[in-house]
Length: 406
Image 1 (cartoon, rainbow, N blue to C red):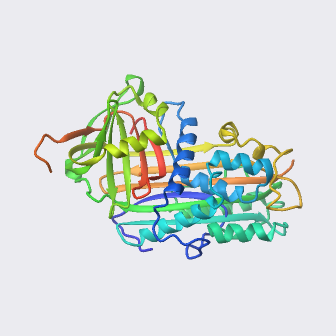
Image 2: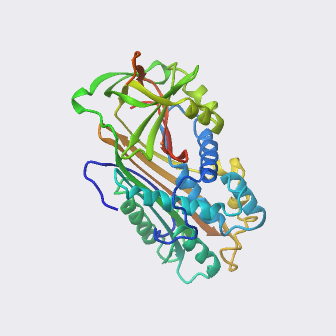
Image 3: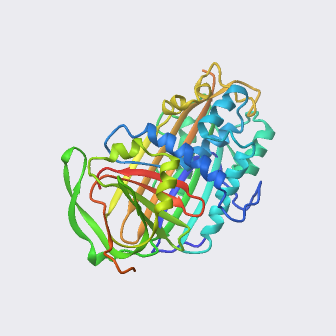
């Protein structure tokens, strides 16, 4: 996929093997599968709700995390598989994994139309000579394009960790470094799974740099911050209800967009987040129409890191993390495997040209041990807001976050 120097970037990774994007377990010509978007967004909102307790900035790719864990789920059996499917919202469709993989490939194909770049990579890193089940490896390769690379976890865990981290950094244009932290790969590690979705695009209507001016951003607890605010007056998809305003800023040809949900009160970010649901987002989307809008948006950059091995069991997948009860018999019969760590790092930067974002997820397994004749709408994002990078046709949330302070 051709890269354009004036485009910006968004990327998301899952830890396991390189995805051959020409491979297809299913054929999807248009990435508009509403069922995939429903599964994706249900997991996104569920996970997001578990991470909003703090007042700081928040950013993640639920799509990356779901894909990484779906690759793991492919090897789960029994109650472990049932819990994972329910938590990942994959349980309502027997072909959920195949549809997810096909959806991501179709998104990548759409990027080739121009205006933005979107590519996906997955990889599996396994212990050399470990007897992984051929059926599992074949499933992951055909469904997600993840090929197995053998590493010497047993005698060189640090060298293995560096190889994985170098791959992640390369897939995210060095935006995500050291995904696997010191100690996350040990001699007991048997498998690490990774996924990367890389988005590079410019605004369909770029902001003019000469119109950017410093202004006040009202952060949490009454704190006031001076930040550079971008400005433009144009037609965008806009909607509102009694509590919030919603605005979509499209990238490239408009297949992808940043959707910003701004509370009408500067103090209502947590109330907004508590009320976020798929139905609320659908209702807001139904209210959005092309409107004449004056937009003030701060330039911002957010970097985040999450360890999800406590959050995910609380969401319902307890067995997968239990060394005594986890059942990943579809991966191997050599020994009992369990998930020891799920690590996610994310990066987003928004400026006058567009958005650059990257995210990476790693799942480590061990053996047991998105002009009318009336006054324009005013959208002034000068206090905390929720934002998403979405696929507009399906509504799937690829990235999601909260800007508490620029």
